[in-house]
Image (cartoon, rainbow, N blue to C red; front, side, top):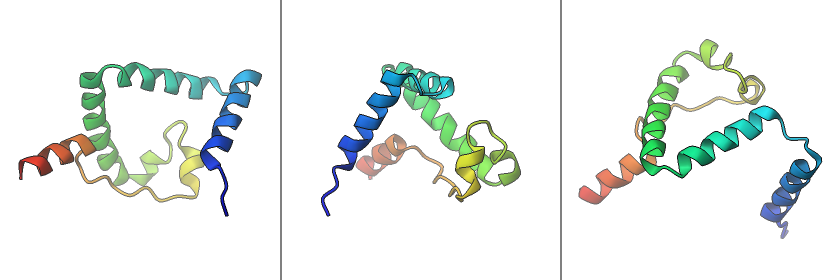
Amino acid sequence: MNIPLPDLLRRWRERQTAQGTRSWAERAALRAWAYAAARPRLYHRLARMYVRVLRWLVGYPQILKRLPGLRRWLAGRDLPAPEGRTFQEWYRASRHE
């Protein structure tokens, strides 16, 4: 099978944007991500913080499953604990070894 999944997903996102059916939370999250992504130092700091907080939260599923925006997503999934480092930290360390 040769399903053009990236193209289909892009078209659906374009339709949602054109019709105004994207939630305010999704739009706000994407704006926040774009702001941080345009500032690498900020992005790396936030990523480090996020990994460490997420690693802590995985040990407390009752808290994790109550976080806004994650309830439905986590209802059918188990979230594995992150390694404790971001990809950038791992990559930098592997280049020095």
